[in-house]
Image (cartoon, each protein chain N blue to C red):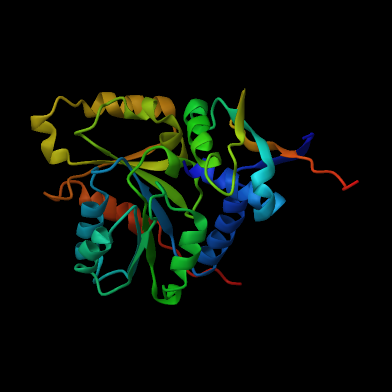
Length: 223
Length: 83
């Protein structure tokens, strides 16, 4: 049978980017700074958020959208620390969140009563780097139990991120990890990257993290 | 895999579900800085294109400089008008 060729020439992310732009407009109009937390699995995204919700919950109305391949365990953990909404998205096998899922999750969140929104992405340093969710910034977590060369192994994620939060700093005494070397490697990939050094378990560096979050708060934009 | 699934969604959007069985090849351009490993994408596409409604269409990955990630073309069986 003869074959005909149909020219498409369309960016694979075009539809997602269109939806993400809509999400971004909606969040900015509501004056809700939004951060997409990305990292490899087990880097401490949920613990960082647990501690943040527990410490800042009385001061700020923080909403969270969590993405997991299966289970809503992370959402359940976080919900114990806040009266505000924790919206779980189960991706059913997909290794990242997409803008359509965030758009749908936002429908359940009262943005007029929200000061700050976190999106806890699926633990994965590859695919989430390519999918815009409409966030203000990606924040990449980098635990000291990982290899110092993670930024050069996963350059796109570290290039896309605005902030790098080192986590599990309390374990530094037990692992052969140089924070100076890791920071230098990350800067080679993204010279504009901002760094924070934390242990959500022990509390180290959390005030600096909260200071960063407070600095991102903004009044509602006039429409 | 997410990129492979998105490519298939785009093919469906372009051709309609019923026509997907006639897809023979799917051309995708992948930039060196796209954050996508061409061999992995080819593997994932091959797996998805082997399942209905597709009938074993062939992924054709073209590497390019830059960060392009684009569905370039679709090759489909051309049934043509009935005689």
